[in-house]
Length: 189
Image (cartoon, rainbow, N blue to C red; front, side, top):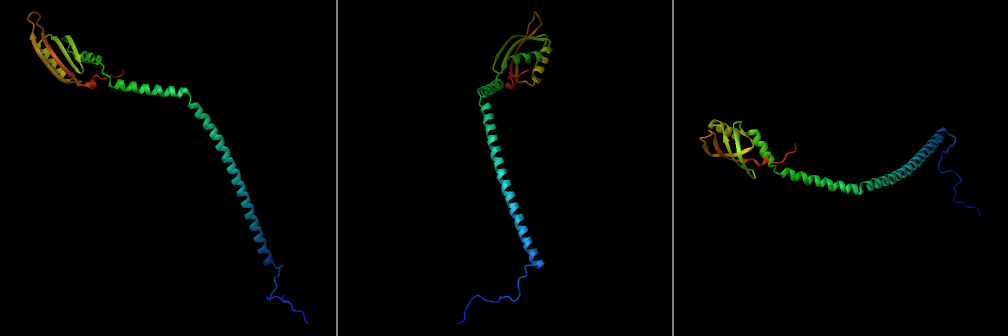
């Protein structure tokens, strides 16, 4: 009985692979070299990413330690004292901005009093000033009235009780002045 085999004795392809041909060698060499290059690049990129990650973690650790040291410096009692002092200074500024300085009324009178007029009494209540005074003549009193009316600090002016003193020749008068409140506000020099 003859021996039967399922393995063919002849190749199914009529041509034979020639491993010695230059075309076969070039295609094999290109594939091998390309895959080696890709493998080396993948290893280099992976190693680079590993070291870069490690460097970033070290930087984070170093910077967080630096941040903790900086916070410890700022959380000192001195910072709290400085904050309270700053708040106190702001409170004082607000108080001074609202503060009325009656001495500004005297500066006002000094600036706007006619040379031939004088005042015998001075009363101040808020922004209202009551004056009793004397002028050398009716002309000096009229000029004083114009000076007060042109003053930007005055809101209202009323002059009354005008009398002539026969013995001295002086003109007596009373003046009611309402000063604009912002004119009496405290201002640092």
